[in-house]
Amino acid sequence: MNAQAPARPTQPAISCVVPAYNEADNLAPLLTALTGVLKDLSPRWEVVLVDDGSTDATPLAIQPWLLTPGVRYLRLSRNFGKEAALTAGIDHAQGDVVVLLDADLQHPPALIGTLLQAWREGADMVCTERASRSDESWRKRLGTALFYGLVNAGTHTPIPPDVGDFRLMDRCVVDALKSLPERNRFMKGLYAWVGFNTVVLPYMPAPRLAGTTSFSMRRLSRLAFTGVTAFTNAPLRLWSALGALIALAALLFTVWIVTEHYVVGHDVPGWATLVAGIAFSTGVQLLSVGILGEYIGRIFDEVKQRPVYLIGRELGQGALGDTGTAAEPGRG
Picture 1 (cartoon, rainbow, N blue to C red):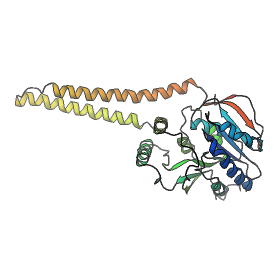
Picture 2: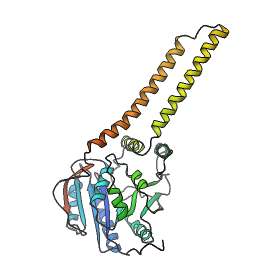
Picture 3: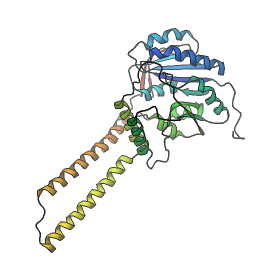
Picture 4: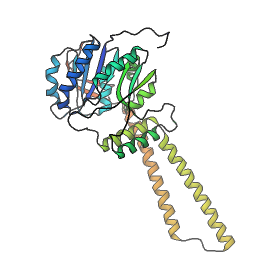
């Protein structure tokens, strides 16, 4: 621990942010374990459950827990996605430290004590890193490697590939995240971008308790594309380099054709080469325009300045401050 840093309290106010989408079967065991752990760690704690527009019995499953002081329920007006749900929870968390964890019990609440100890020793952000990806399919492992290889290409703030959302953050980190105005949010990139003194602890996610994940390959691909376009210009640079190479190759081919015609006397090659070259260059141009269009689309989303999320209902007895019941926008 830094000798110049002030000593941190042994029992800080703890906020746990839990995004949930169709997690009705997991809420009771999760909240039983989570509230038990928090009561042992600090007398001042809260659980901020963010319902991301669930279509199952999640609202009914949380009802009995709303009588417990410290359990708060934010229901978004529709399904905005996990990044928006995390943003809503971070915006409303009031603790000295904020813990993010999933509702499916793959992030063990028992590990929060270890995260808190690392914070007491001076860390501003304590992340958890998967010890192994052996439980994932080869397609997901390959996609993960390709994504992080691309998003970290040439960046000054690399995103650790095996570090997820399960983490503890000091209030200074939370305030920094809240100050970021962008609408297209890729939280793993934002965690890395804000910096601060970060400690990484290895862990192995537990099997999902009930239900199936809502992250299909399509949604993961969409999130990955958001991350790429939000944190790197590598696709633009890649296609710029490819365009330069094609232009150079076309120039050299033209020189060779002209030289052959005047020196050797052969006829200029016919349509097959011409058509193949035009088709290839046209395809590259269309793909390049599509990538450029994605970046322009992100700019369009930002300048509209629509809120990241809208809260339809807020219930529960906040133990760290007052809570409201009116619908309100987020980051408007």
